[in-house]
Length: 236
Image (cartoon, rainbow, N blue to C red; front, side):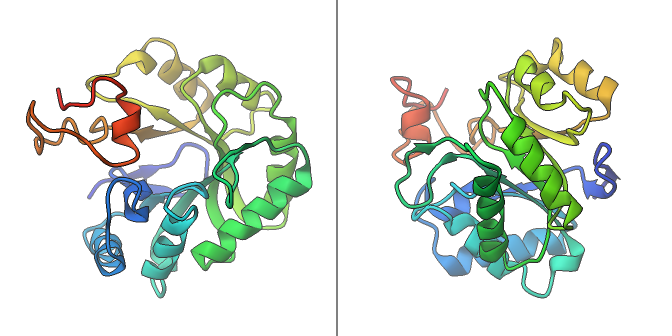
């Protein structure tokens, strides 16, 4: 495994990380034993970067809960990235973050589900946010308290990233990037390089289409890809 500095976050991570959206049953049913074993196997093979979010899972939050359980006794070997915002834990509906206390409470809830006393990187999960001031203030307070080590945003829009980096405090950005989607190469990635912002790639295998596992006859029935691809509900 190769390791490199994670932008200006202050620690090194494996160049291959593990996204854990799928261990929460939204990509199809995954039993808990398989989910835990998958995470632990990843650690044993050198992966030390895991990405999750409060909204991942059926029920919501299941991804964080399973990841936290899988990493019991292994926490000092890994770095955790999670995300808050946009979705409510109970309703699954969009819930805008309007106060610093909402940011603080959501992070505390993630800490509880992940069974840890700090999160390495916390991201804003609203990729279209107009005014990120509540997140910025909330994340700064949590960083001062040692509850998060660094913070950033998940977005594909350069103008949103620039808003979030207005004080040059954004350490990490999560962006969709793959052989089938190279839009970030034009301006987004050069901006990140110029400002020392770590890039966490979302969908490097385009939600599995580049994995070699599917044929043109494949029909996705899980709650993520069946909706994500819309009318093009077949592997390409």
